[in-house]
Image (cartoon, rainbow, N blue to C red; front, top):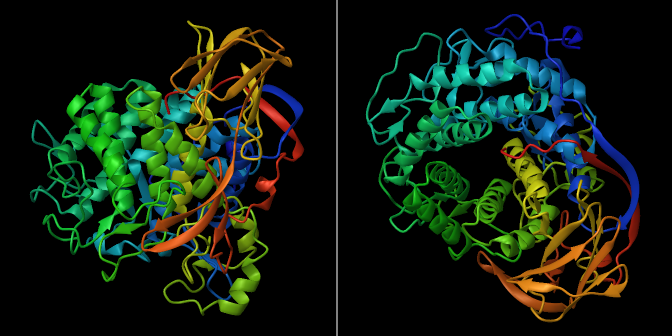
Length: 622
């Protein structure tokens, strides 16, 4: 229970009391199944929960260590101001528990929720304490955007959006009104900092002290506009989950700010834009941060859908297409470089920051889910390749890498604000932040940043949820991604990429619609029910067949292996592909090679026994 929590005596919150609260309960069906040994998002969810909860500091109310460096000797993870991306973990952890039935590290989750409740001040804002957290004044990355003195309590408005999402998720899962009250009060509290121009609005600052007044100095520079995006997107999602119209109004006004071109991030045809030095509104291409640009499109897409703003939706869709076809991305692999633009720019990195991959997946899923476009082939490629490979599931290489190639730690990240305790083991299940096309450790020092882990975990839940869709009126189960999945309607066993074979064990009478992937020949497939060939209908890429409870429907099609050359940023790689899955790459990586998947090159998939869980609830609007 909450009252037994051991809280840090040195960290002083604006609200000294920890209110009583309960964590969500996991209820549903549990059983054992033998499934193909292919990509399973429920399995990945359990690993993600471990990674998010293990990379935390028990001496600081389980605050995360935001960055990990395997290229230090020894490998270490450290605190700084950017620990604030912790709030990206708060919603995904309870949601991913619904996927995999994991109760690992619930003590960490309790500390996080106590943090959230203790952060709310009388004005509704959520204040991060600086007392007892000296690393909170160290800007290891991103400090150039904060030119203000920080008080002992500072409201970080840019991460408020993710906190609102967490409050909405906990309200949905527990029914406890305190979470909705927290969220509503926070929305009303942040409203007074909006500079409202009627058709659009912006924030003059994103760091606020108690009692601070609003000072409008005009349109802020792009580097500050970047900070509004998490808030705007969180406001839209909070409205989607709770129905609070005020949250939608504020989120939409921020979206209009970007849509109308005030932000410095959107070109007239939806193209990505950047800025030369972070301090001006000049629209130049010297540095184009991919993740910021995709966040803009996420905000515009969701705000446009909520307000039925067709022009805003179309501009967001153009941005999605630009993200795919900008000349540096690679869309079979799902490789989107951290920055676009001239490589000689001193900030330019061409490694992949998983944030932008997660964002592109979000944009693709939302367009597909709402009927705006069919992006499922894009998503299938990206999930099977870079998204799956960048999740860290093997760590036995890290100690040798650190020992043989590691560099000394650099100030200000030396002790006491870091840890070297069991770092590789604790990072298992996280996502890398600087991958190369063929190597998980694409940077010689930097390995993981928590923002990528949070963004990937959010999308992992949405991928798992939205890969299937049940329509109760039509009694139709639609399967958009042919991956392993347990559900209340059917269990899906996928042999892809070893074989073009998917088995669906029905748990109710229904119509079944299975999406043929883009590489499958449209007319060359077979459908059987309980081993007998049956009639089916084709509607676009979907094969429709009717089945009854306890029957097994099997879809089979030809899957082939072929070699091709792909160009990633400015280098050619030879890859071997089965269906949409890259199973080999040349040249291979040197530190922790990716896409070395000989088990997927067998003509039959291996089998494994798993514990299945079908929750009695799914959070639909997150």
